Length: 435
Image 1 (spheres, one colour):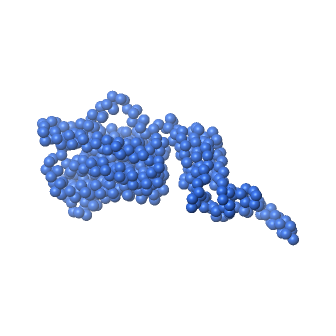
Image 2 (spheres, helix red, strand yellow; image 1 turned 120 degrees about the vertical axis):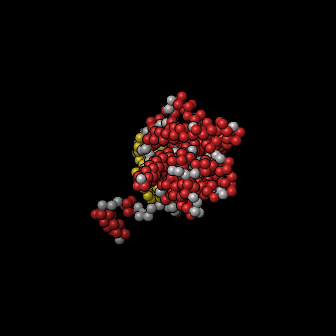
Image 3 (cartoon, one colour; image 1 turned 30 degrees about the vertical axis):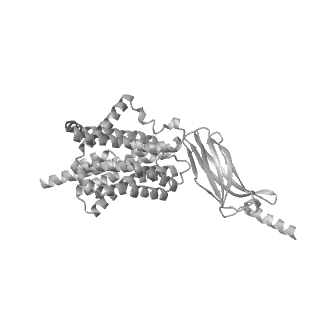
């Protein structure tokens, strides 16, 4: 009787075109991956974590098999089983040459004296892009002639000294007595913006390293272009310089602190080194010459007058160089910038401008001050974020994370240019109407 039932079952399966093994495959999914696409930017080892909630009837019976389609592109180094409350499998992959391949993983269990396939995931994409062919972020700016680089560095230092000479002691006294605009800028730069950056990267499901790149860009103080933007948009120029100085000093504490907090929230604490001393050295490179300019203003006013005259031309030259570098290096990564990254690159500076202007209006500050707070909130020092990322990560992860500050820098420059042109056009039209 049992034999006849088995024969009947096999006949039915044959009619339906299914094998016995296929019938045994469950409709429930037991496996989940931390990524469906693995990208390599150098010859290195990458780990793919596979989580399994399958419960085997016996200890250590379930195992994972891994198959790579093209072994010339990459190879599987080992597969490690890590059991706790849930079973995790760690697949270590090593690149061999540039190209693309796919990965198939299978979960097996030893049941009834034979291996049984529990679940299979196919077509996990593996893509290898070696840096020798794509260039690294840091090599791109070095395509400049060495003499040009030697000329730019002294210009940056002189410009910082000139900024310091522009700071009036009276403005410092007013800022000390009425520090609300500075508090607003500090709150936006070191609390509101990094938190927004973290939330949006999680909503858009960006990779951990790229998310950290955006968070670090969001937590940067205002850049040197803030003064020029304040000048062109008729903001409070001296207040803009004071804000940049204060926020850069605060960044000595807040940037390492935010790096520590958000790296742990993103699960990067194991692979991230926070170079606190190098971050502080980078920031002191900004603070010291500005402080020197303030001293020159008080001790040698004649020198200060000369330095103040060169602020505009030097600022225009440096901003032009910055825009050129942004686009030159940005084109290297244009293939890695997807729609999500581009959207967030546009959103970050726009949010800084919006928060700065809205908060200032909320406290009924004068219009020039509102403009200045908005500019300081939106014109972030993306190159500072780039330096921190390059110092914090291994090179292949640093290149991935560095896409964030470059995207923000390009989008921020375009947005500020659009706002300036719109403002100038509106002002010209208003003067024509009055005339």
